[in-house]
Length: 334
Image 1: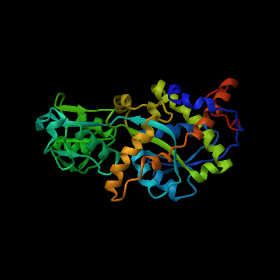
Image 2: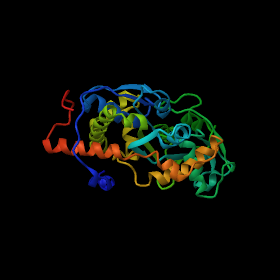
Image 3: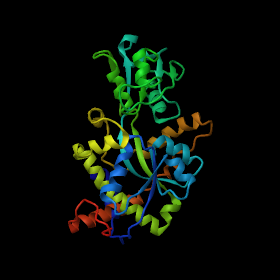
Image 4: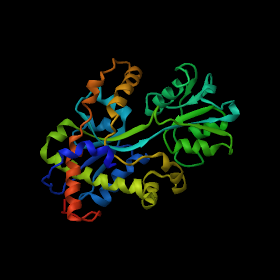
């Protein structure tokens, strides 16, 4: 992670540490990517955060919410109507996968022409499927997209993508984990073909705040402390996942064996990706099209990224590490 943050290091300085306070965080509480926020609150942060189900949409609409977590596609959707939204940290990067049924005559991406492809249009999954198939010259309309539902554990129910694949109601589908892995598991061994290209698409699941929250000195200090501890929590997710499997399993109702299968496609190293602005600029075109609005410029969406909070969190972390403080929560220390 530090290699990705090296461009921030010259800006580091010592900070005044705030008193304990409670933050309210909005996230989809059924996705794997949100769980580092939960473990940060429980293990590292000096006050337990309050979690509400949602993402960035509640963050920009409700002033009582301080932080929101979501994929970059939803950030773009909400930034169009509220330019106070700010990306302050990357929680996870997840290269999505597409699974197809060989029995449907599919062995390459080009074979998806004329096929039924499950996804959720207007989301990160819909963007992924469209971009992936463009790499072989297939445009939207060269294949049929079919809506369905996600699943977190087998047996998957009716109208979930894994069940639809097994029943032959779709020939392939592309979605986030663990639903994709359950699709692989739903077909006999050797009958699936899986496509993935990180260069084409990876979910960039970020932590967000707002310009107003970050301009409030007291609130900003609280957010900086939380981010400092989130950095520590994500080190465990990245370097020693066996320590968190059971807790992630309990938080999102995904079995540990299934988590172990999908963990390898999750990158928890954090930071702010160097190509984030470029990614946002390209994805803005897709989100604007599906939302029936004019796309914003790359320069405009670039203003959503604010690295200054990370600078302050790293300074605080560096100071703490020099003092040799432990990694577990100690009330009153922060």
